[in-house]
Every structure is written in structure tokens, then in C-alpha cells.
Image 1 (spheres, one colour):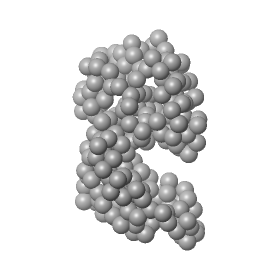
Image 2 (cartoon, one colour):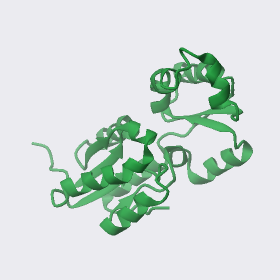
Image 3 (cartoon, one colour):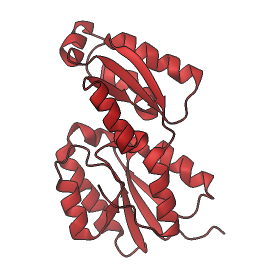
Length: 205
């Protein structure tokens, strides 16, 4: 019989694959994961209420709850709610920052503000979320309107492979952008989940 998890991680669906991989690599039993739909990012004002609902639905069932979301466009609303609920979240404004690390991400942004970032998740779903999601399969001319202010695509790779790097390079070509990639691993996500495991708070930024 497995050990009963005492911690719940409420996570963005875009991180589900990575969080489960990290959990399973560390025995698979020290926390439970409940994910909210990744497409909440299309309407970030809905994120705070969705996370709050998950917290309230699980309050009392776990010794503690941790939130694996950045601010993710909520304009500080998520942090304000989490402070009221006395719950911590992973540091960083978004997954790009906590995968790359705050200093490295700031350097990337300073080097080229017009950067479009992709992670393993976005790369796996690039055709559905970007090409078909933005209608570029039907109207490729719209790429200029959507991405005309971008100069490059940077692939922040959690588990890099030659095939994935090639896929990211093709994605950059589809959008008419220069290509770069950085092997970030799991970054702050791994550190925060390890802290959850040992009971050390991962403070919000």
C-alpha cells in the first residue's frame, strides 16, 4: 500500500507532464497533483477564481497545499488571493521565468525584448495551440500581424533531444523568426517541488 500524500499541488495543465515526471522520479507518493486546464491562459482573469475553487474544494483533505502557477497574467490577483488563503506558489511571473531562472530569463529579455518563448509543452502542442489555434493553417499571412514585432524564437528545453530541437527550429521558420535554444531542465519548478517534499516554503516573488 502506498504512502498517503499529505501535500496537494494545484498546477497549470501546461506543467502536468513535468510535475508528474518529477514526482515519479522521487518515489511518486509525497504529493498529489490536480491540474487546471492549460487554456485558462487564454482568459487569465479566470485563473484566480479557478485556483481558489480548487483550494476550497481540498481544504482539510491535505496538511498543506502548494500552487504551481506563475502570476500568468493575473495582474497580482493570484498572489493577493493566495496571501489571503495563506498558500505559497512557485516563484516567478510565468513558466518561462521559472524554467530558465529569473536572472537568465532577465538576460534573455534584455538581449532581445522581441522574443517568443516555447517550452516542451508548447512545442508538443505547437500546431494545435499556435498554428491552428491562431488560424495560421488557413491564413498564413496572419503570421506577420501576430508575430511582426518578434525577432526570435527561444526554445527553453526541459528534456532536450535533437528531434525536439529540430521541431523548435521548424516552428521558428514557420513564424519567420530567428532561432535559439537553451537547455534549462526543470529549473525553479524542480527546486520548489523538492522544497514541498521536505516542507520548506518556496516563497513567492
